Image 1 (cartoon, rainbow, N blue to C red):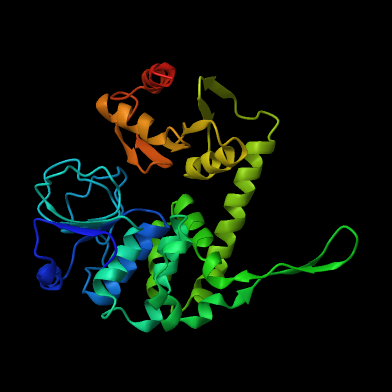
Image 2 (image 1 turned 60 degrees about the vertical axis):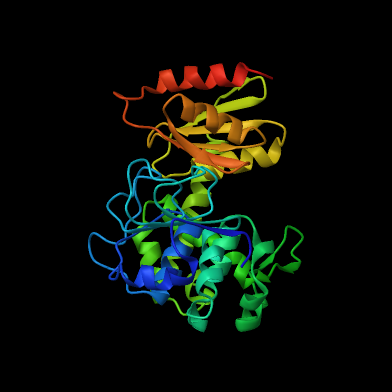
Length: 332
């Protein structure tokens, strides 16, 4: 198995350990990798599925009400369950049962349980890897067991010169956008139910609800960038701070587009309506580590991370901005 470490649990008995939790009280991250991970687990083990479980916590790492957490970083309080993850914020000697990989969590789960995952759910591994921006780590066995994933689908239209154009893409590459869009609109459990019932990638990318979600989010991005009152960028040395206001959880999408346009700036995008913060760029880990030292729930990966702000009374936005400016000024 590639780059997987086991902490405080017997790797040869992990299936038995998880089966002992059935029906599993599952918690997952509300993005493509988290959802793929949750649904891969549910394809192998009996997961409690009712009004309470599975669930995606509002605060990253706040999954103490579960007994299995996937793609959710280190717990923010004492935890008695099992964690399967790939975020680097775990302590060197965790006091909880941890499986930690260096690839997206859904790929870790595939490596652990590949012989138990049904063929009609293997495509979820593509959702995990593509959603995390790492399609190159999709295991060879996935392509072999589901060769249709490289079949193409796209749209036909006329360009400005009235010429007919086609832009098909491999269908596996199209799956993360509709799922992430549904999550950004707040329909996380709708995305979970869609993935649980789907038998193939096509069931997702051709789903009317998923298609509408993609259009809604695209329209919202266009509104933010083209409005008569555009967002203001505040640059402090190599860090750019951007505040937006949206009813959707869209800070990550905006931060990614900004970073793609200015790769030597690290962007911190704050959606003031939801108090969500996304960080993209070279200095991401430096910023999230310093914010963690100041008591914020912050983490992620080397190039992309986030912050979970508490309510205004406990973590006022202006105080957070001042801390962010202070961090950005030093030591560079």
